[in-house]
Amino acid sequence: MDQTIAHATALSGRIALPPDKSIAHRTALLSAIASGPSRIHNYSTAADPQSTLDCVRALGIRVEETNDGLVVHGRGLHGLTPPDAPLDCGNSGTTMRLLAGILAGQQFGSQLTGDASLRARPMQRIADPLQAMHGRVTLSEGTAPIRVRPAHDGLQAMEYRLPVASAQVKSCVLLAGRYAHGTTTVIETTPARDHTERMLGLPIDQVGGERHIHVTGGTPIEARTWHVPGDFSAAAFFLVAASLVPESELHLTGVGLNPSRTALLDVLEGMGADITVSNERAASGEPMGDLTVRHAPLQGVDVGGRLIPNLIDEIPILAVAAACAEGTTRIREAGELRVKETDRLHAITQNLRALGATVDEQEDGLTIHGEGANLLGSTVPSFDDHRIAMAMGVAGLVAHGTTTVTDADCAAVSFPNFWEVLDAAAA
Ligand code: S3P
Image (tube, rainbow, N blue to C red; front, side, top):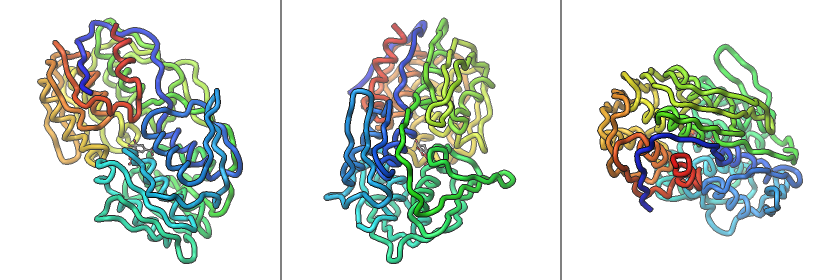
């Protein structure tokens, strides 16, 4: 599907965001290995979290859809059953990497596969720690399909210093640690999103600038009720859209505000954005609140270092903000973007240039020379990447004339009705 976006003069209204994708994946996985039935309110209908549910079902877990959410009938740490076929993770890196940690601890073999994009993404980063724990995990030239066989004498605990700031790798090792003999410690030097350790209630020592996260093998996971907040990463598109389009005011309610996810708020405020947070509360141990964003002129900014993991998924839309700001923006130390659903540094550069922006691409970052609201509508590809498609949709609201995003339906990977919501805000 191709999506055409017209230049907008104002955005207004209340935006209903999809449930947080990262948290949704984890509620399904943890509930599957919990002892007894867990309820999940506000589970996501987006393609990625649905891939996780399909995998959980294929592992013998009954998932009931009720009027007010899901009931996942967990069967304990060792209650999963061997799947009949390779587990299809679709486009979802989180499904594949977290599930690999759980499967490494099972007494049966399995295989994990996914779509062409996922089969091209690096998996050595999870195979290395799982093999160090005596997991029998084999890859095909560093990528999926992943074959998992039962460990000969079970998984062994270890201390693991994360070589890459990745919540998926961290979570994979923590989940495997739940199956290992002894206590596994994951050491994080640059903190990434902390949902897994929060949701499992794991003990954490702060050692200098490092986080030492401990997980003890064999401890059962309690069944419970989960409430999934709105996805901050989805809110990000509207925070930038309303900042850029004159005369705009948008209200975003029930947004997850976990500090390990919201660095974009600080960066946008540093650029001059007008965003207020209200009604702060918590849902299942995760902070959430309401956001109001009004149009404001933006200035360029420098972003790098420890901020990057806390806005990793927001960089495509930050780049759109930068292209429409006054002055230069530098995004540094963001090489991880090259191994997302597509090479996002390349995709952003190509697409913003197609709309008339001046962008220099570096190996691990971008320099964007903002020229105010000077983008010109054009046709740009989504690169089959949901966040590239949605970022270009927002750029289309600002660009003069019309913009077409080709293969735009991939937005449904995280935000099934994104194009309708965008359209309604501009009406
Ligand atoms: C995620 C972690 C991040 C993020 C992805 C979701 C998660 O990936 O980009 O969209 O839910 O743990 P990395 O851990 O590979 O950085």
